[in-house]
Image 1 (tube, rainbow, N blue to C red):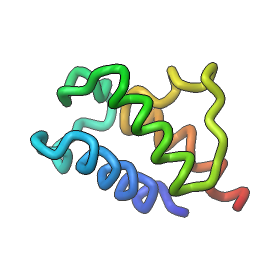
Image 2: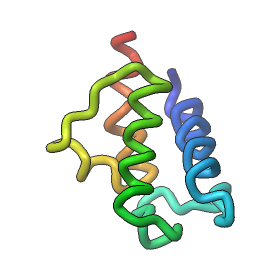
Image 3: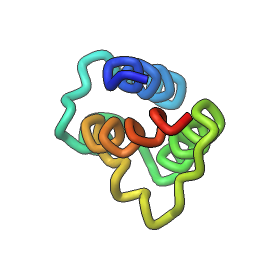
Image 4: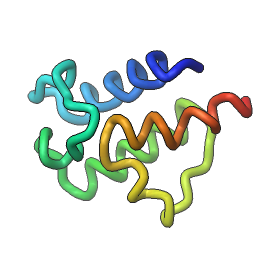
Length: 83
């Protein structure tokens, strides 16, 4: 998958989890929690959806790498290319 395809998939996941927020205008380098109304359960929902859609494991110690759009894309890109 390309970074743009990964970004689109993440945007889709965020739109499902935070339907009242405008996820199309998310800044790449600002943490999701600063831009969207997300709590810790929402974050876990994001992780679970990433696991389900991409069939990858995301260890808990890697969660800090999933805090913004750019960091999440950077984390997922090499894992997507392995599939």
